[in-house]
Length: 488
Image 1: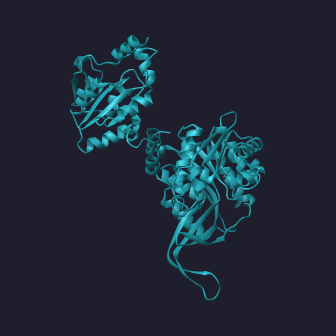
Image 2: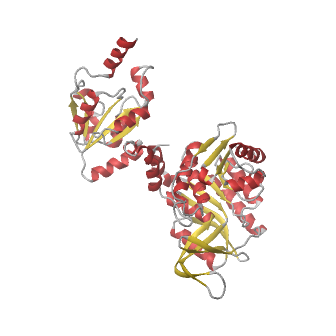
Image 3: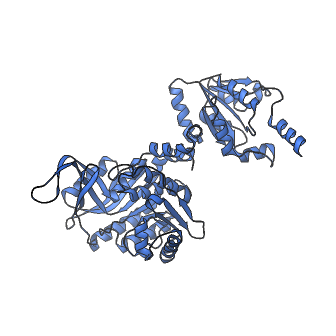
């Protein structure tokens, strides 16, 4: 997983429409300090300093999706009580669609109160309903799902066994999603995972997987046995088991098992980490990432979430920064076209003069470096359009490039004179030039001004073309010839 892919995902995430179906609840936190023991009983006395109310259960999944920037709608049931009204008000404030949250006067809205002192939970007090839905309310949910499921990119089932996800509701979701080819992601609960038959992927933690499979997971062998049994019983194509400090394991029917190590960081609280996994996995799948890449995204997000106290969300900036740690210097410079276009627009607004050049840069040599340094001196920022491997092959033959596009991009991004690198797959950078609209289009001195691709485009809005001389005798072709002469 690279930074430019994640940046591009978040650049378009506001077009992703997510439907969350499940049990809603309020999480109330009483923050205080505990410095004495009660004279009435051997318990700590907590002096409450502040109170905080958060979305809990499926609401925390919603909160995570909103924090990531996706569009979200909720389908659930709450009571005709103050807690239910608070939930609806909170969703409205976050611009979450609540048309499918039905009110049931006979139902109590779930509320969990946690007392926290010195960064530790002292006690949790639960007030909730666990009864299945009434037939009338269940029918309303199913009818809404049947008529609206096709308008979403992904559906998430967040099951806390509080009664909303009845078998009829689950079956209706999976049937409607299957008809519309929409992925259904499930955070499961209970011992019987067969109730989710037909889902795209389940995301149990290790304990939940042990309960569902009846197998104690002690090592990789028992993990594989438990996963295989669950997948066979449920008819799953994919299963993601989260394993706390051991990371995650993704199992795919007929495919390779992928073990994703945890992202090392201090753990303060695992509350809601499963919700973060479900939400980030969903946006990855909806954005077109492969299941393995989406799972890696979820792993990074979960690693950030557990470093915070209480059920917490993760921002796109936090995820991007975490991904960038892999290549902390060069990776920040490599962008996809859509992301770079927005970046360059902002740089222009700050008065920066943009220089653009392009090429294959296969086997980087001193001639390349001097050329790029001269190009950079023409303005404030140098953007390098780099031919993809497919583009190089079309231009230079099947034996080229010698160095792959990702490696070429990182080598070039490590140069101080280059500010941004962007790959393009076309034979020429014309479309890239149209998108970026640089002030200066730089090209090698072996070209004539009239022969530079994009000249007319740049000059039409007041830009100019600059021809930069090459160092004589320095070329990739010459290097290849010398290698063949000496070693063939």
